[in-house]
Length: 333
Image (cartoon, rainbow, N blue to C red; front, side, top):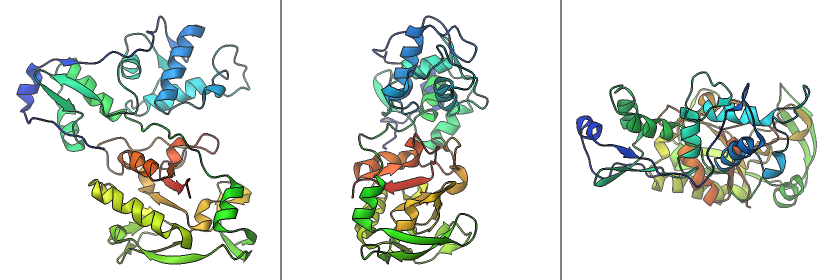
């Protein structure tokens, strides 16, 4: 995603300007929502709609599993979504959004899932790049508008695409059926029987040359293994990231081929088993943890919109299997 200042200026110049934050069409909170909040139904609906728009909350059909009337054994998805949102810009998220708080301003005043445009006098600033953001963040004397702009960038989360992950039947019809497999070590398995569509081949992805692999070594040539039908999809994905100037966001990778169980489910296999998925910047985007934020080492958030445009699904949008922000998989064959 393009991030730049349309006109360069010193910190002192910026400091003198005010930041006019565009107002959202969403309603305003009347009271607190979340852990320990007043939680009026109207306020809960406002928060859930905004969290959903930003990609932190599931489909609208999920939203009745919320704070109102929640039983002890019911998963409180609303508070969890608030916490996940706050974790993108707070060290210790509270799970509570109060009127006038930073959480409320970031959630209601800024356009979700888009480059945030702020007015700085006679010129426009699109949220500054990572290095500039870190520099500005250290300037505690800046006015609240500038600090809000910085926090907003760090709170960016890509919007969920209109398509979903591939159904198991589609995977088997397109990339082959793995009929039998046997465990080897840990989560890994060995395929012992498959149909003729299951074809793993080698492909050279130039952009991966020199990148670390998940085993701790360095891939010198960019040669990896993936499904025969997926080679072009991988090549186009990495070329698009390079064309956008984002290849330096990738520090290490895992896969594509890694024949293993899908999480802890020993009856199903990960899409890595078919060579149609890849993991990026593993340590900074661990399973069930918030992904690295914009400007931080290992962040993959800027890669997501391009991947979506090419038919790839990002694990940071998983809803039923746990957050997996390192993971990108083919969703449109």
